[in-house]
Length: 304
Ligand SMILES: [Zn+2]
Image (cartoon, rainbow, N blue to C red; front, side):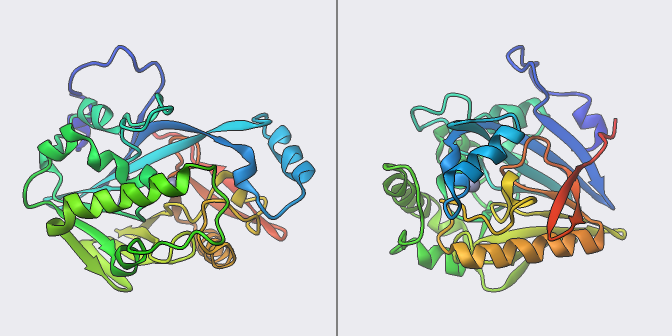
């Protein structure tokens, strides 16, 4: 994933008319954000605890909606020394109705990264849009047999008997989430490396449990040469800067999710680090500023 690798991509992909990979470095770490595509979702899932008119006004101000909007799906690849780390794996192409998602395997290949070179995978949480990509036959077959899959022990335990009491998801979703998580455990049980509070995946790469979105949800912090980047997973959504207190329908503990989000945004604003999140618009690389009682997203100027 050094720049010379990026400059020699795999097969050119004539279908890709928009940028789908973005490379940057964090100290000695090489980082690549890859778009898995987009997932259309009802806007009402983005704020379940506010007046629908208030929610509609926010989306109108953002020039998206009114009923559906495209949720971005970003996957991170990090190279630290001789380790290549994948953070999440996108939705996969096996779910009908999402033809524009599940792009990450071909885009990884187009970026010159062989799935067989991946030594570690970090799963922020076991929702289908984060583990689904690992359930695609072609991906399973190309991953090396000794790949390590890091996920929090709390997350694995949670999906034994997941609680959807406080979620507000479209009808078939809880059932599909449950079966996808079960399938993930079944397929990868012998490769799982579980951790409690945090885990150093590689030099400068640490996974840290936050809870909230799911009880075992983790973020991934990169720290090298005085530079920092946090991959926030699903601790943060596009509405979260203006309205960190808005509950998201996919959060299993919405109130804890708010606390996690506010802390994450405060830390990012104070440190000036880069932030990337799964569902912020690609490439989702930017900084956080404090804006009164809320926050402001400051997209990074692209580095060419
Ligand atoms: Zn997600």
